[in-house]
Image 1 (cartoon, helix red, strand yellow):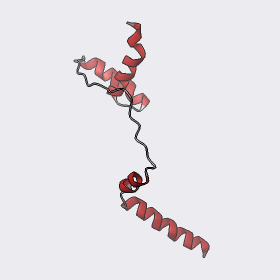
Image 2: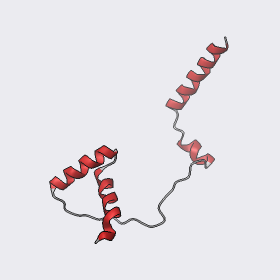
Image 3: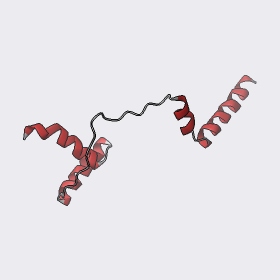
Length: 82
């Protein structure tokens, strides 16, 4: 009997979790903290050869990130070399 009750409670909790938007509860509880960089980031535009973008996309996919994030990492790691 205990196992059936546990399963029913688990199903009820799962159903509530899947159907309820918890955003207001989280905000009200102040349990989540948004972390933002202390320095402001500035948008920029550059024109790149499509071959470079394809290489970036390929390398980024291996890491599980976007190609723009990959470009940002590369710039951050190598900017002091120039």
